[in-house]
Image (cartoon, rainbow, N blue to C red; front, side, top):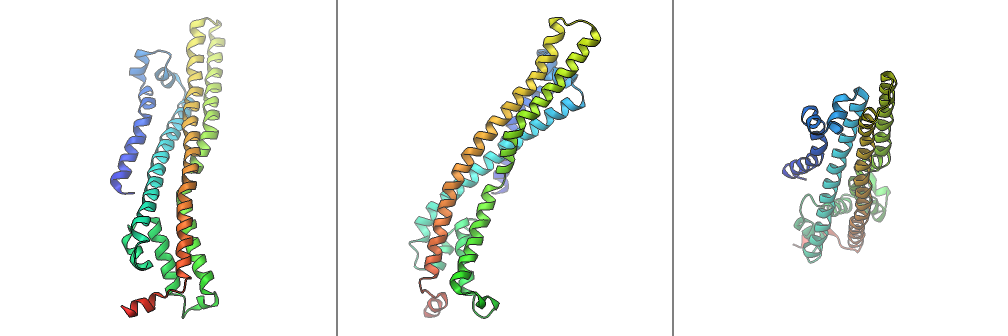
Length: 256
C-alpha cells in the first residue's frame, strides 16, 4: 500500500471516530445536552474517561483495519485477474513473472519458485530433492502471504468480543458513582437519577456500537480471505507443476 493510500485510510478511519470525539468536548456537548456524552466526559472521573478513550481507540482501530484489509484483498483479486491476462499467455515462467507487478503476491510466489529451482544444485540443498525443495519454498511464500492477510483479524475478534464488556464496565462504574451521589444527597428524585444513570448507560451503547462493526467486519474479511487465498494456492500449485514439468530455465536461456 502506497503512502497516499495509507493516509487516505487513516483519514477515513479518523472520520468514523469524529462523532465520538465531538461528544467528548465538554463545553459544546454539555450546553446542547446536559445528559449526553459531553456531560459524561465532564462529570466522569479518570476511570470513566479512560473507558471512553479505550472504546474510541477500539473503534478507530477497527475501521482502519477493515478498510486496509478490504483494499488489500481487492488488490489480490485484481492481481489474480492480471495473472490470467499476462502471466499464463507468456512463453515461459520467467517472462510471465516479469510481466507482473513487483508488489503482486503472485510475482513473489513465481520468483520464489524460480529461485528455488535455479539455485538448488551445488549447495547443501542437494541433500533435499528438487521437488521437495521447490515445494517447501513455494509453500513458505504462500504461508507468508496468508499471515499478512490475516494480520489485524485478531484485533477485530478481540474488539468484537471485549468491547461490550468494556462498555458494561463503564456502565457499572457510572451507576455506582450515581448511587453514591444519591446516597450522599439523601434523596432519589428523578432529576438526580436520570442524568447519571442515563450517562452510564451510554457506555453500554458505545460498547455495542464498537462491537457490531468489528464482528461484521471480521466475518466478512475471513470470507474474502478464503477466496483470495484460494487464488494464491491455486497459482502456487500451477507454478510448482510448471517447475517440475521438466522445463530447465538454464537450457532455455542458453538456447536464446
